[in-house]
Image (tube, rainbow, N blue to C red):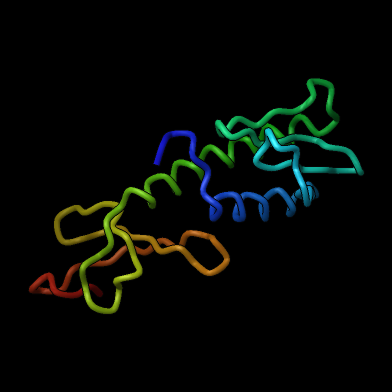
Length: 132
């Protein structure tokens, strides 16, 4: 996955965050944009294919949009790590991907049906064939 790729799951999860702040995703964004978000009937900001968020300089929603841009960057980082992570090769948790390991502990995540990431921290059992 390239540094600029935005997965459908990330786009769906981010759109829910934007909607929670009153920004409604447009049904049919312009062909050069991945997504457009409207508030008060006007396009407030849009997401470009290179993961850049653009908005009008004089928008009354500047602070909210900048907060959402920060949220998008954080989400993108997590979704990129998830995309590169290897599946856990343990029975019962095959749908989780390993983010990190330290000693007998591990952090993993799975993609939920609503496109959000669900994080867990586990400890390996005595023979490292399972987790608790």
